[in-house]
Image (tube, rainbow, N blue to C red; front, side):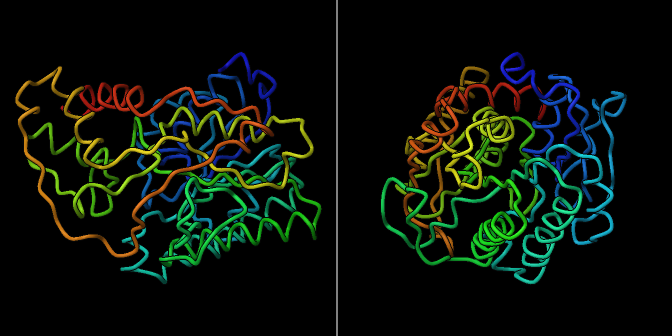
Length: 331
């Protein structure tokens, strides 16, 4: 992957939310490529330990600040070739519990970043969109041009991001690319906290021989997407020379559907290679979660056609690698 994107060597790239799960992985690969990386983070959900290995790299700069402050955004964007905007308050349940802060960060902060990137004349603005934008649409697989009504405050903010990016592209001649992430997982994803994602949370519980709680009967399915696929999409988005690929929104996924019951069996399989007792841990079922959709499956044809995307990891390969990382880092 590094050789493929060597064009980014010496480029100045801003990663907002760079101390977070996805952001820190992007910072890491960009530094390995040889880019000059600036990380903007207020550590609301990101962690210092995610970027500690980068602090001694002369190509890495940390700006501790909030995207809700326009001046901070202007400072961070100054002199940058590309912006990878990952900063956000994620989680559907969090947005239901705290819609005000979710909107403030995800909408006001996003607009600040667009304005700062516009004023700095960055070459390309790539941002984290979300599969939650599909809302109550029952169509499967999910195709970029067909969406439903949002089912949570978080989904509303992410759809508004797409609308703003489209308007800025048309009004200010910006180059924007939105990546609708589908249930991303992998190394550095935080297993702690009230809004921990399902895979790191379940891995942590399995390692403690605790029974994970599945919301509903376990037949709900998701397009679980390993971090390396997301990294590839971001790098393709900032390097593509296909003019038709710019100012578009893309599903960032694998194109496979896995139920929560299937997911737990895959996790047990690979965790069980380290600890046989984990294979016997039972699953507990709870009520369905508000704002959840039953099934999610992405079409990745558009990304393949316009960006040349080809996912490197399916669910089994991704879980296997993730489990190895957690086993080494959570013990």
